[in-house]
Image (cartoon, rainbow, N blue to C red; front, side):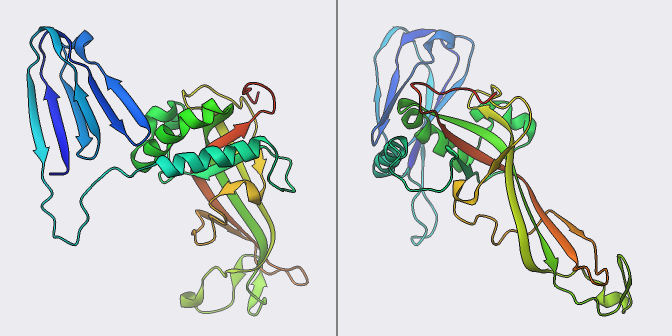
Length: 276
């Protein structure tokens, strides 16, 4: 057994709150207000402590299921990771950032963390309720810590562009955009040398979906991205190759978009502000 699932059927009752705790986090769940007309589902891993308060009136009808791990022994049993040490480390890092104790050549007080999933603009406008999987779990862990320390956390779309010289020598090229060789060799060359990189975010909203950046974009420097060099092994979504033009080197541009990112912003004042 690795988890419990409880289905609460429509039934009128009061009381009966469920308190779940794990590591340093605790939450009280109360479905009694809508219990007569709603079906509710609760689930927790076995390593989550839980307490069921007494029902003070009426009757609660519930179906309880134990989830059994039937995978081979070498497959780890599903469980909820202990985030206590990670949370404390994050709090320590944010406090150092708050106190300007990190050496950086950048004046930006902004960090962007790439999410696992890609979300549409409409998804991001719904705030953190649109997040799924590990993204939702990260935000649930980070939000109380970030807000407690006076930081602001939001969601945005991120685009990365790289431009430079293409890996060709103009060998059989006789006109812009055309090659004088066999069709099976007609491939866009790679990039030989990077001349310019740019990363920008747009559509920034807070975790409730409220716009923080009404118009325009914010350009990010390389040291404002987490993880470091996140686009190193990414295939471009779009390419723009202008071809060999005599004495002018070939121009090649790669675009990776749209990524979704979690944005941390710190206001040196007493409270977060909107980036309007």
